[in-house]
Image (cartoon, rainbow, N blue to C red):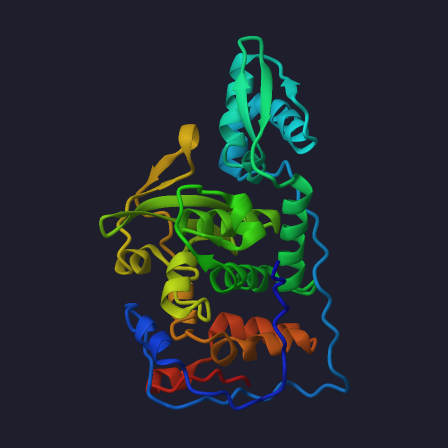
Length: 344
């Protein structure tokens, strides 16, 4: 089991050249402006008397947490859903729920839970659910893997944007693409391997577990069915595609992070798309109009070179300067074909 090591923040350094593949991949985006400069220097961090001590975020998996649309769809069946989760996680042979309709609704949403990998369900007319063990894992194994992932990627001091970037990178860079018919969120978190459905499910799960409202989006990439995530940052929805990021930059960049509808279409995924699943799926024509991150992360194909300078501010206690650098995207030399982050 890999553990995602927190991103180390350091003073100004001269970084090596960008990989050619990453540069080529970023050029496929409509707003990419990648220059030919070899290497780039980061701005110096604000003066500090001693290096900051960053604390990994303490995290405990919430087994009952759902995306907002799934929770609304469950309605009065929430208690039955929780009872079903408890029974499966405890390895119980059955669960007595309040009635067939409520049990069927709970089972439908449960199919998207990571714990669905642990059991098969059969519902009787009186609401009794027979639980048949499946696979060799356990709820404790999944919860532990999720906790290690979050605590290894996110700091206690991280704000919403930092949290989103760190979790996005943990999935897009830390997981291996291997398509299968399983569509198993459990496998993706525990073994860190899966196809596009698992990449999207993992990011959606981690976002929601860390207070970032998210849901699964599905559509087509060319002639192929594809899944990604729609999530909110600062109250605005954006598209996030960790599968494409993994393919294009090896997860080193943020080229598919916080995309507007226009950027999503340009990458080859047609709109409208479907958000949610099953009985709570809905068609969305243009769900993410805001283009803020299209510009802010315009040239990010390398985490260390393009992003780290912003995060130096928060590490050294300069929150106001950090927020200013995020809001203004101080990347003026990128306009001239040089990738550098300037901090004042």
